[in-house]
Image (cartoon, rainbow, N blue to C red; front, side):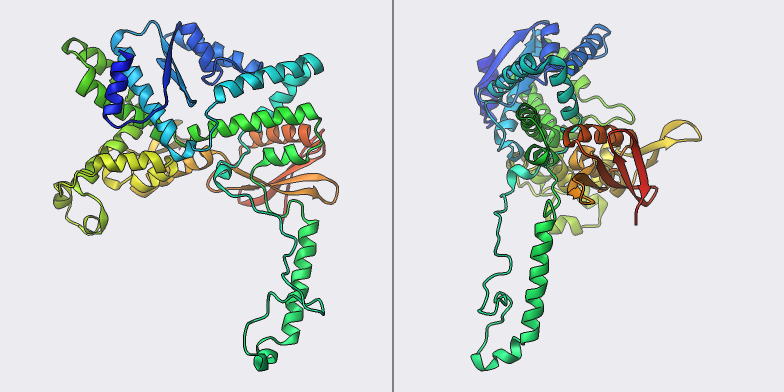
Length: 487
């Protein structure tokens, strides 16, 4: 059956690594799920807590995990033994589409394809540290690191590191005046187009900037807070190594957070086609429909990434098949004409594979969410009403819906934090800046984060943010939290 479904998947031009399936009992699947999909992780109490939550959810009939698949080469997938035959077929088709997405989506291009082995190495290394320095000390340090694991730069793997340059001012003439500001021209015009006083002023400004850059640390705001701490915090070697492990794993999981809607939508799109067009017998149709309906079910006030993703892929395929894109279509203001628009281009399949390769969730929603799609899918914005003490629909306007979705997806819906000064007040204190970008700091979470940062930096830490439209500095000195308005 596995080879048969893999053949169907390849027949639809899905391209994936070798995929290894393992059949496990429900408790074994819960254990793997609590480890983030890996059979082995470093020891920490949070994994046990997640296992208990998953186990109770299964026992009380609140949730059930049908499969887990790991971005690796080869890919590993876990199937629950108790699934019936129809479920196993569906899950395998779903898994092959996930594997295709892992292999071909740009967001995963820089991920470690041997992470199964790497996770096992991390577990061994941290267990050695626990034996040497004590389990409590190691687990407490990991606890602080985990509360900071989102303070990375998801775009960093795609950015070239800037080389350090000491020759900011350019070449100098014999008098020490920078020549990089001199305009080219005929020699007899030089005194007119390059006045001496202008060149000297430019040289002075450049010198002042060089001096300021040498004093500023870091020279530019650093978004990858974990990397900055690894490089500059007063950590022991084993602590720096553990923080590096947490950071490496955070970057490995980051693309999954960036592509949740697309990844699940892509897998649902293809399991639907493989099952309905290739795999089902007449006797299996009802069981399949029952399971699939649960996958794409929606409930008020809750976004289902499977449903949103698959419907958007279907909409893209339909629009590009019929030519519902481009200047002519966009400028058509006749609703009836647009509804029946069909140029018979047949470009839908090609387009969705292009989207699968190049986009992440933020780009996906920004590029392909349309007013027509929002109306058909009945999308809306909701908020809490203090009067009725209930969540209520607040807006159905397309722009409001789109903006709300984009804000929730930007940086995983988490605040942007930058290191701006590691020698604040010339006392070695750490100063960070929160850039709102539509996501506010939660005061309780901010305080916990400052405590964790202090535990690593070992000096007072501060974060600049906005509270009630006022620029505010939140601080922690190891004993007390502080909050003050700043100009």
